[in-house]
Image (spheres, rainbow, N blue to C red):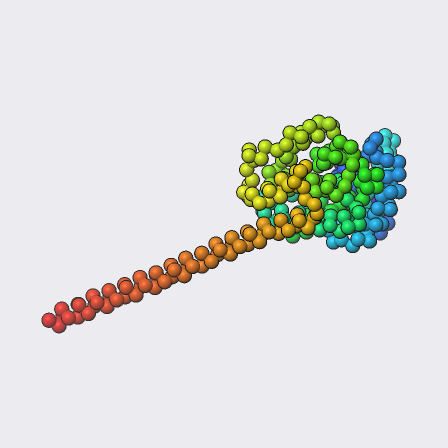
Length: 314
């Protein structure tokens, strides 16, 4: 049994707990399921992190977004070797988007549905001057109907705007997070672009690095878009990703991103409708041809029958 904070029993881990991973757990006090993540202290985490996160979690609860997991407990778990922080949220069925991306081909509708829900969550928090700052597939829970719940809102802001960099996770950070440790709404837009890219191409656009400087250099090199071929071949979605990752042609607000994603689905729906109409027309045309052919065969049979009768009389 793995107990965190002498209260939360990890349910889906038989061995050692992986840091920075969301686990299902049982709250021994209330005997109910929760989700929990354990992170280890590192030099990037400020002294007031826990108390700040309590304040941030209270603010996020008041937003009442259906796409955001509410934090219900925060605490410190000390061992002989290190100090651990644990973050507990309400329970939600599903798996991490990271597992969904790595193990499945995501069709266009699923990708747009997931990203639109992420954007709606960001829209609510941005209105309240809150950003995520650590948006990545491991912090996004997706159920079998592609409903989204986002974990970890408030953690970066509770750390004075500096990403925690747990387990040296820097792959989903934007340039100004890597360069000057500044986090804002644009950081989440950039992270969404990375997530969408990974959803299509099954890899990250800039690769991976061991430190901030190396990661920033990889981003500066840019993406060889001409060498990439999308599985679903949707150029419109790739155009959205390019703009999310761009330093120049940026999106100014979330509504513009949602509109562009929605237009892709409308165009796809129009194309499918046209295809269906053509198929229906071809089906009707085929039936007409079959009916005409049947009538001709019947007429030919009648002529032959009459001919035989005349000959027999003669």
